[in-house]
Length: 604
Image 1 (tube, rainbow, N blue to C red):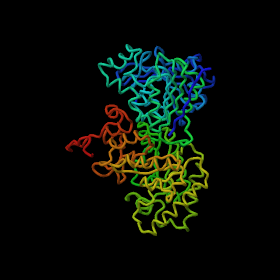
Image 2 (spheres, rainbow, N blue to C red):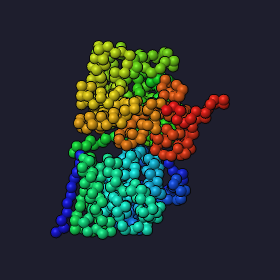
Image 3 (cartoon, rainbow, N blue to C red):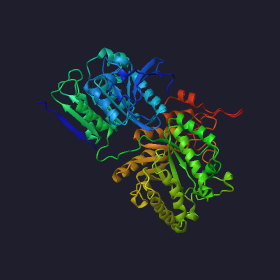
Image 4 (spheres, helix red, strand yellow):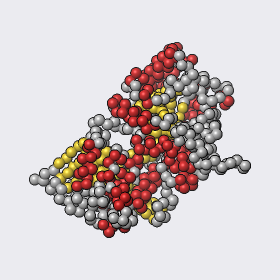
């Protein structure tokens, strides 16, 4: 009998060509499934032609949110291994991807002897970015066997912000220690381990366990002489000490392979949340707050609704690879003409779906206390919804009718990602104790009104601080998602505090307002959000007419109406790409004649 041990420890593309494969290449797929795509792209790393295979699941809807599973082949093989090979590891990846309706992506990553050197690393990152542009991708998982098992650990350690789970089969986590296939590894890495030891260390996951915050599954075999298991066993031990979610399947008497059942178990571990984790943590959220470029405030958004301008703006959001926009509704405009408002909201949802973007509607808003004005709205800044003068009990029936018409009509609409019931409840000019109590009471009613519509989407409140967001006295126990805002230099501490509080409540957490020049720039905030693995919506997409983008330099806003940007370095941070590519997508605005050229970081 084979002895084994299973331990569960928890605590943009330059050129593109797509070829549809023959039926024989579809392997496990249902005959009615979309055809396999053999994709050729121009590598940004060196301009060479590279390839990957994309396998859609049966019944795949290109416009619907999806997850992807990247499968990295072993030494001597290529992109077709995980698509066609009958061996257990490959069948398991195909079956699990199909079972969870995931896109299976199998790259060459520099063909048969890659070992995840710099070129292969750049290719995989580019492939992820390209697929995000084509589809509404939520989560990215990566797996591989042997060389691929080593490569997936290396890539996850190099780019933890891109990966939501990693599964390594019979790989190494230490290239400095590993002794086989040295000629191929030297060619891939650019030198020997004695010549460039730091390059080898950088690609050895064992040295960077703190980066592996995602779920990690490892299969290892005691008699494996091709890729000895010592380094991955040590890595699993360290991850356990760090209280990271890790599954180790170690078969002491097995050789250089992983059986089908073990591969399936390991893959399911990284995909399925554990008993102490939420079903959807929304880490995939990459969004912006959106006020159309023509609008000065939330009232004008809907009174002067312009679908052509909105469609153009959403095109910018799609190019930025955003998957969510947070949009402020306005009950006063609804009451002015309910059907017109509802039609315009429906049109917005349709336009967002066209650009593969979900919407986070904000139902009510305290900021900044100004009452809605349907006459002079074009000359006013931000206005509250419904306003402090309409929070009383006598107005609740009218508010519930608004919620019924908006939420009730879209309670099962996949275009809505969640309902933000109220924005920054206490950020208002009305600051007496009686005013705050009125807001608190109304907020409870608003939550109840929304919940009575039985929406399938989660509810949240966009709190002004992390402390308020996780406070049960402020309805933290009555929302489905914890949401908070931060515009300070203590961003990392605030994120961690919110994550800790949300974990105690058993709820996911997002930050749905962030970034404000100069003290909290994109360059400061975006790396923190990636490293802390939290979903985000920055303020705001457009450099338009709101008071937040009218200053010099603008306090907030990323893209001008003509498609230019304020600073390409900011676009690069949002998209996690190089500045040169960011400038190609969104050229930086040039100064007017006679105006001095402002340094790129002058606002910071």
